[in-house]
Image (cartoon, rainbow, N blue to C red; front, side, top):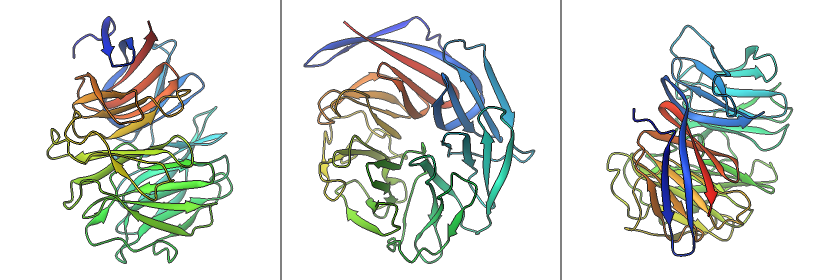
Length: 341
């Protein structure tokens, strides 16, 4: 892999210019699709049952543990005050609880449903966490949740409060970011035959579903990632992972909490995207999205996009602070550091 530590690139937009530097924090034989930031470190879960961290200030300070002798694959990672939680894809699904201070871990819940394939996992606050898996045989998402910080889990493999999915509609385990929350709302995004948004209010387990104009219709198309700046303004990105250069109807924004969506930059972006995040302290104006073939940046609320890097095989992204973006993917974790001129 090319050396990135001294790479400087200039982002030129209509409104301003910025410099940024990319450096590599970690290399390993691993595919990482879920990351969290805590205590000055990047925490990750990935393939071959691997979980670990790398210190952003001292890259030599790192540690990796292996959850199981089985080659489990993790595409979810969540945290609350005292613990990290990770769930492997495929059945049986094991809910691993990891102590943040000691890194001691244990399995606190099993999902033995034959359709178990956990796509995303998020803690809304210290007590309430929600994870979801592929649809059950009854065509509803498989929901698991905790209301006491992860000590007890409620599993609903046929949630009667969850709307029915269309045949061929599901969710993508791409970057642990097709779930989002803001204020008292939680959103889940889907793809496949239909690309839709499911919304729950006040943790009441009453879900509503909203249509989108997103690309949809085949198993590889749809929404891969969402983020909400507040309870009204949000963004969704995705596309077709089998046709990654296609860039039609793969970015959309909402101004009413996900009820209606407007396509942005159709035919004028870098293509398929797996993760999107609002830049902190920019009031929703600045956004970064990453795909297998690019890193892209918007400075106008997602209306237009600039490809700022052709770095490949990145799947997940998370802001460490306003000027530091962490990205992870195949065999690496990298850091993108912005500096205003």
